[in-house]
Amino acid sequence: MFLARSAKGQGLAPRPDNQVAFARIGLLAGRTGTALGPSGYVEINPIRWVGFCAIVSRSNATSDPDGGRARDWDFSTGACVTAHAPQIKGFLISPFLQMEYLNNHERFAMAEADGIIYRDSDDRLRRQWTVGTSVDRAIVRNGPRWAIRLGKNFGRGPASSEAGGLYFVGGLIIPLDHPKMLGRSLGMFRNSNPRDLSASAGHP
Image (cartoon, rainbow, N blue to C red; front, top):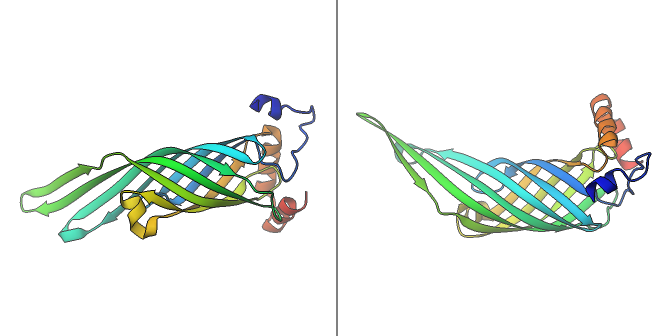
């Protein structure tokens, strides 16, 4: 199906402006779990207004409790379902529900007279739910899109209890339907100034 849509039309005609790409990838960074870190996802939209995605993320933080050094990090994988509303002035608003399996780790280091003592702990795998909304807009037509995803984590563990369970990431979403058109848009992105990019995204 992906190949069929990618090759539709010998001239690779652009999709309608209010139609979401069949396949997209996201490269993001922000707070997904215990702290800040990178994340990514692959999104498939088999019908016009509904999509499914696979997610992977990692976050880490350090602190200095009781004269030592503590490092916390987590790794999570999961999936989501999202709905795409019609675009408004180029902005695509997409509520989402995602479920992730989150694993937390901690290493505590304390300097003693005879050297540094390390203590490691591994939290059990936890299931976490996130409810939120993403907003994205094309930087150039048929090319990369600025994106933010904002939501709240639910479940047990620090990802839900700390910072009010905030889930907030931002970065780029890249449509994969038309590789040739994506290549042209990347060239425009590299060679144009910000005013030209804004005009290209808003006025096809």
